[in-house]
Image 1 (tube, rainbow, N blue to C red):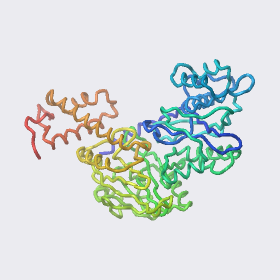
Image 2 (cartoon, helix red, strand yellow):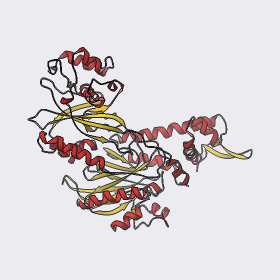
Image 3 (cartoon, rainbow, N blue to C red):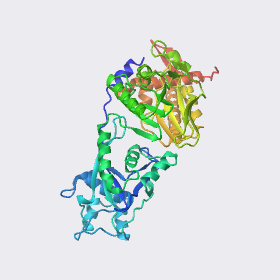
Image 4 (cartoon, rainbow, N blue to C red):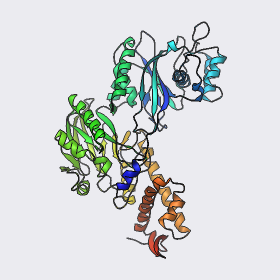
Length: 517
């Protein structure tokens, strides 16, 4: 059944990264304080996370001043927009002081009433490359739906200016010692974007004078690493690997959770090169003291089990999965131990030494009969498998998929106290409640569209396809048909619709009298 899904998935191309810039704003040569901002919870991309100021290069940055790179221009503009800090000099080589006029210009920039270049001209200021030390470049890995080619600059707060965040896309900004921010992250007090965390860890307790060399070396190493380390909380490593996933996904997120013991969730790649990237990453983590205890599967689909048997053999560890997944993998992947609903997977002591640490397996069928999610209560994480995605709605494909059961599983996890949802496809989100509700709302909307169409008369699935999924790209037609079939089967079991002969085919129509099954 999944052969054609694999063919379709293989046609999805990577999204090219957008040019961007980030600013590492320091308090001055005598201080190792760094300014970090917290993104609004409402943002879909890293909402609720702490990060360095910065953003995409826009059209107004494409015509920088002579000798000034457009990314540097974007860095200066974003710093002024987000933090009110303007690193530019007048003809005497002086920075502007913080005063009401500067605030008015910032409001004009944020409100779109003036361009950054126009503000610089009006204030008779120029950007000077010497005020921005380029320390490196990072590119978002291909697994992400939003990708950035970001250049980072180290700069000092000008005398007489104050960094201040105005509520909007950002909700907070603070000066931190890097080690203090890392300690808060370790204890689960804050969320930090993985690139920000990596840079903070290198800064550590070093004096600011040592940062440039250390940061440049780190970013060079990260760019040279085919699978750079990505951590959202301590000892929880994301390993995004290319698989034959369902469109629009091109990757499956493997997760290495814990230290001693550690569990590898859903090693999915079937391609030999991708498998080697996974092995290299696991070998490195083992050399750093992490002990792999088992390969753990969320469900049986090919993009979640492609490297399971090889990992089991290579590292001498068993494969664990739900009994239904074991049944569906018979003759394909050997499952050595069955994992049941509410079972705890011991992780030893939490990274902050606060007490016992574990994963709780929760049976959440619907997408697949043996589907499991794993809840981690200390940092309040949900490893969601294919229950939810931050890229698109999940495919419910009969006969394995059952829409009514899937909706029950979604409502079940609504009761969890979850801070961060880690899906198999797409990036992490700190808005799990919103994602779950949006998924429920979308299914309710689709069901009502089907009912409305059937009210106008009997329909074949091909008719419903045009009415419910009008304009769907041809490569996604089969997925839309499966979604319609799952919805119709749910309505059939509820006594609201039925499949009946019509001419030389079959059509779906509303039941004249509700049935009870």
